[in-house]
Length: 198
Image 1 (spheres, rainbow, N blue to C red):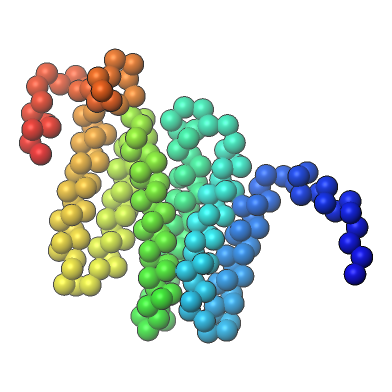
Image 2 (image 1 turned 30 degrees about the vertical axis):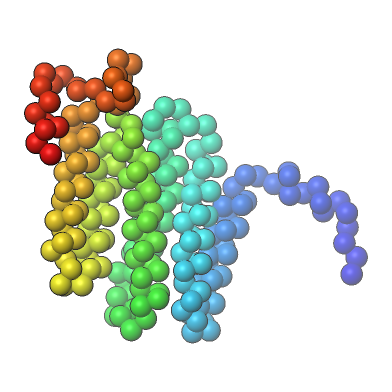
């Protein structure tokens, strides 16, 4: 079979979004093959490809991050939207997935992982920390919904503790200020009461 050598020049000329779109297509192929062939073990690579492809596509959509929101938007648009779609698919297919734990846990686990990545990316900066705390609440909701009835109480307690810490980080600590001390500075508070309560 003859291969034209000029085709080797095309990949560097392709737009940056091609890689993300290709990985998303690979994810769709894995999902379709898994459902068509009845092979649940294709769901884990499908959900990983969905997360990675969405993140790569979002990174190309927001190429020049300016400020905290510029660095956070690719995470929010990429991993956040992929997590929403994956968990939406998990909720829509609740009845069929009860008998297929590999598929169910793949969708729920990838959605939880994606939401946690978004929350961790946003909690670092003052301007995005409130949004990250709200997204962390979604992660707590996913953990609660997916837990067995016996384990739900501990999930809620741990989730409430983590969520309270995220809200207090957003409300109290200013980490991005120019006069920060060792990475942490009290935002207008005169005593360390809020830290000592923990």
